Amino acid sequence: MANHEVTRRKFMWSAGAVAGACALRPLHSPLTFGEFRLRQSYAGGNVPLRDRAEKKGLLFGSSAQQKEFVEDPALEAAFIAQCNILVPELALKWDHLRPTPETYNFAPVDWLLNFAQQNQMKFRGHTLVWQEALPTWFASYVTPQNAQPLLLNHIAKVVGRYAGKVHSWDVVNEVIWPQDRRSDGLRDSPWLRNLGPGLIEMAFRAAAQADPHALLVWNENWLEEESATGESKRAFLLQHLKDHLSRGVPIHGIGIQAHLIGDHSNIGGAHFKQFLNQITDMGLKILVTEMDVRDFRLPNDIGTRDKAVADRYYEFLHTVLAQKSTIAVLTWGLTNRYTWTAHNSPRADGAQVRPLLFDEDMNPTPAWSAVGRAFDDAPSR
Ligand code: XIL
Image 1 (cartoon, rainbow, N blue to C red):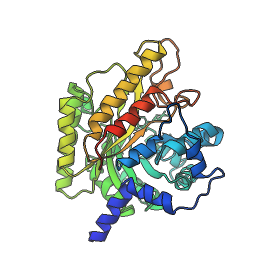
Image 2 (image 1 turned 135 degrees about the vertical axis):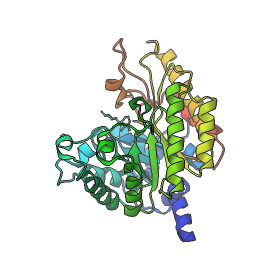
Image 3 (image 1 turned 90 degrees about the vertical axis):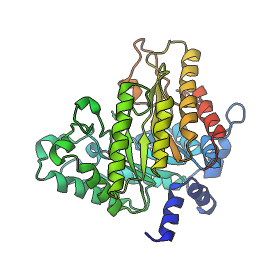
Image 4 (image 1 turned 60 degrees about the vertical axis):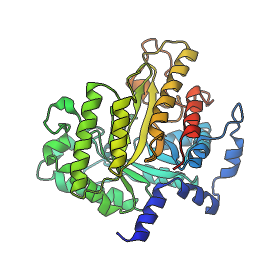
């Protein structure tokens, strides 16, 4: 690869590129970008997270859906003020993109990409290989004979369509699952059953070919616990990364989903720190891709709950941001108005869940302040 290409890639992946774009880009939204930003005067005169992240060379953002922006101007305004990176929560998953084996539904992705570009945000792609969110036609359609062209055509078409416009792609998602008891630790998924373990290399190489400028990410859950599960997931991931990198497979970073649990104290400990060091030593970038803190086991009292959630955000991010290879933090949703944890991890007492940075009234929560402090305390990169 030519030197200028390396430089260009580094620039595309960094927060500096966003700051640069802000200065050059004409303003298109009905309320200008600057007006939105000026409106954000939270109690205490707090500075938006995207500014505090950018100051340290970091990206901050969240997942969202088109209909949330269309139906909820308060969410739209907060997102524009706070975020310099956006990831579609659903629109790029197979079940949303592929209504039939022959057709693609790109309209919601195009809309979200345009929204990101109009508001000086980078855009993430999530995700190409995942055992969930497969279309209803998938199970009866896929065979060991057609699985390879099915996956490769999908990657060429989807990644190719957005080439040069995507900051990073979650090429594979949750492919390690030691509980399935395979000796290689890989998940016994429909993809694996039809393609074998070579599917990871196949997917990364196809993504690199379709978009040579995107950062290609291996995204995983449950990496942060000091438990047997956490240790085993980290060990298998490190082993596969070493193996793939030694064969020149274009993997550029890892995604740590970070769906944390509010009363967990066994996260982000010594083994996790050692793992982060090993990832950094391999020359890989680190992204926190889907952070939220589930409050289903915390007491009902809102003050107690919010404090525990905020503490988890700060402790975890303080640890991950200490690594200069960490380039981005994204939460899975920005406000408690829209969070998958409401259906995935509801509270037994029926109280509304509070896992994110803005509450039902779109006021910043203590978790918002905790994330801001973690950025302020992080070293520059
Ligand atoms: C979730 C969505 O937020 C939910 O709305 C959907 O029902 C299930 O998927 N890990 C991932 C995300 O990589 O894509 C998941 O998103 C949450 C867990």
